[in-house]
Image 1 (spheres, rainbow, N blue to C red):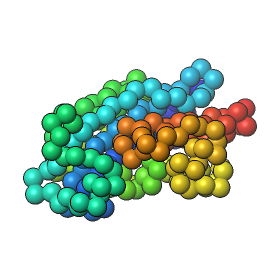
Image 2 (image 1 turned 90 degrees about the vertical axis):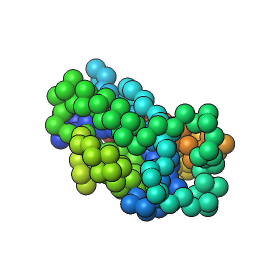
Image 3 (image 1 turned 180 degrees about the vertical axis):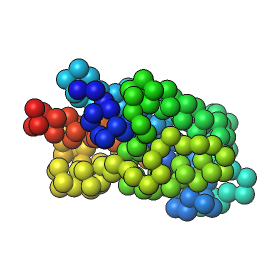
Image 4 (image 1 turned 45 degrees about the horizontal axis):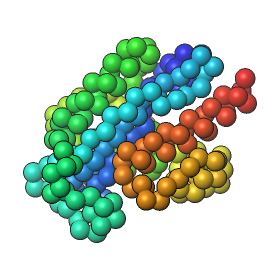
Length: 198
């Protein structure tokens, strides 16, 4: 089965962001990771390509100290090698657009844990950067709902543990780690469904 035939022609891309607050219009985007999913000959999803960036706060961005304490990000650390929102999103959008062509999909759909939060920050940063997004503007695939239905859990750490995926609390709340675990959870749920259908 082709990827384009699995989810209405959408290309699933798992995204997680780390931010300096909860308001996408005023608070800084500090880290973003995107994992483009592929599909194998058996119709099973797998993590195909990972793009990860630390992001410089946009000019005038609000930074909540409580948010930095929660995610452990030191925005002044030179080893973050942070790039602008525009550079990070341009790289992600270019790779996603390439896969849209390869997979013959119509549009990308954001997969996330509390996906609407991630989509909001991506959309706000896209607007600030004056870029055109390959993502559906309001539809998402949310692993909160999927895992609630599948295993009765809504917290990412509890959901992945319940389905047998390793979880390390010391690595949590980094966009790279959380995106990888969300991708594993999504693939697990969809691949089990694929087995049941076939």
